[in-house]
Amino acid sequence: MQRESSMLKFLLRCLLVLFLVSTAMVTSTALGGSQPKPNVGIDSSIKRLAAREIDEDSLVAMVRFLSTKNSFGELRSRFVLREDDLKEVADSLCVRLERYTGGTAHRFPFTFEEKRFSPNDSTYTSENLVVRVPGTGRIDGLFIVSGHYDAIAHRTPGWQDDWQHMPAPGADDNGTGVATIMELARIIEPNTLPFDVLFVLFSAEELGRLGSEDFVANYDLYIGEDIIADITVDMIGYNGKGERGCALFSDYESGWLADWLEEISISEFPGFDFEIFKPSLGNSDHASFWDAGYNAVCFVEPGDEFGITYYPYYHTVQDTMGWIDFSQVKMVAQTIRDFFISVGNDTIPDYSILSSDIFLQRGDYPTSRKVFAEGDTLSLKVMVRNNLMCRLR
Image (cartoon, rainbow, N blue to C red):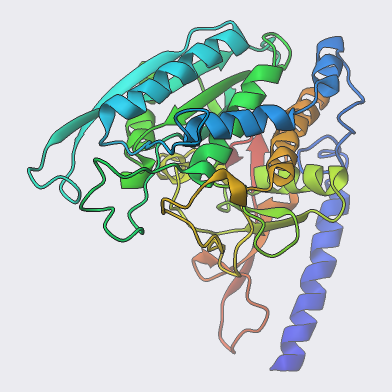
């Protein structure tokens, strides 16, 4: 059976090569192929964006603001049940978003009941923060760059009983993600990219993605424009393995996005450890988009073989700035910027087929298995995308 499996693998490879060669004329400009370098622009505004650097000092300053209350380094709390404290942070973030983008920062409130940390089953209110940076309109739809700005420290002994007074600084989780989003909002000017970019800061992620679930459920009311994809950034600063890198959570539907981001990252940062998990964990805000049928991926810091973080101060009051590798954070931010530039430089075809759209299916489900049993039913699945990168079935 091992010999038969090897022959099957060989035949599948031959079939894939023949298929890709036969479709090369159709997909020569498809996403997932060889991408142009970000500095080879077809538009002067995109060239200007390519020249604007991610400022590591800005990333540091934002994480410092998010995790400390004053110049003495007193730790703050961004726990969502401390409504006044989190609103103070939200107020400042909105002011900065408007200053960076020239647009209006919208605040979308939502209410929820909390039983785990609130003995009286109280009702709380929090809000998602949203700003749009308009593009030229050459490409319909918009990209979302998102992450949560709340924090929690329940793994600290005694915190769950005294969260009203103990800090939840969340420097890595998710100060690093918020800093990345804010920095991208700072450098991407209106009417630069051929599509709109929506920057979204979610609240109450730490209680179960409550903010992103509300946003997605009410998206047609809030925004309504077609979503090309969401890129979530959640906890990207810890360098536990001694090698700078990141993990990217994806599902099969979003494989085109994961593949392209990986290609950009490897091209720009040789030696940067970039690992895609597909399928993967759904424990951050990207999963709210998956649940609603949208393409989405999530950047996280390097972890184990299952994508679980190594960070020893995860969800503790020790999640502070001293553990963050800001050069790693900068690389992730620059990867997203260069991805947008690459999309802006490309001519997106009406229809395309990506490498991640060709996969082996065993029975009713995709499989990455290499050895099969006698009687297994295998099929080669090929998906085609339209110019919004949506798979056509």
